[in-house]
Length: 261
Image 1: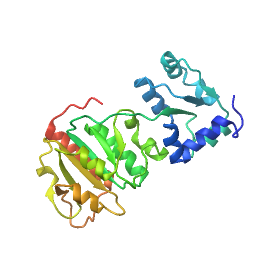
Image 2: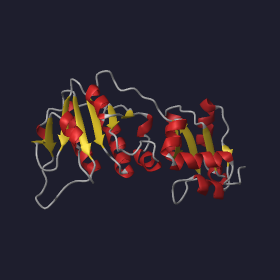
Image 3: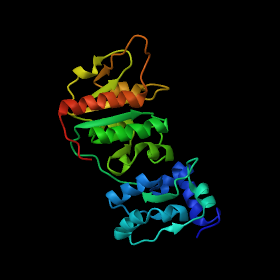
């Protein structure tokens, strides 16, 4: 049992939780809780390290057995104080794992992409990744200034979407290359074509700007047109994640797709 917060593995987990450059260097991030363990089993992903408390172990023999079937690696028992030291949550769930950062390539001919411009709110980004996966988006592109997708708050909000959705942090020049041949729509709070009138059945990309600063000049240069969600005059704007959900599920409705992710 690991009982010291100064253990090298504990310090490694803390760095992954708090340091973006370390996550990028190690190509790994931390997941916490039963739901994430179930996702690892579902996708047959072997964690680099698995940590759990005795209390958690006592009630989760089945999922540990499922994990052991393909990982062949024992987890590490830690005491409650160490779990608190490693966790990014106020009330640690009793289990966490270090997993390799997925490297999913974008389709050669994507039909629907979500571009998030300087999305620096981790809660919003996590929700958007979860929504994008549910709506059948082919990939999410993060522009410079965005929070990284393996940030602990993003990971929690994504609810497993990172394990099945390509997410790429790119420059605007790279994004312009990716979206060649697609119609790029910029969501605008005040002007543009009504989102339900847009033809989402053709290859399309949707740009959503941050709530604080909106979309930047580069987004307007890449976009072919603006679209908007009609709202009551008393409502100034929607949360960025809510707006993304409304538009993406309209795209899915038009496409009539059965999403299998």
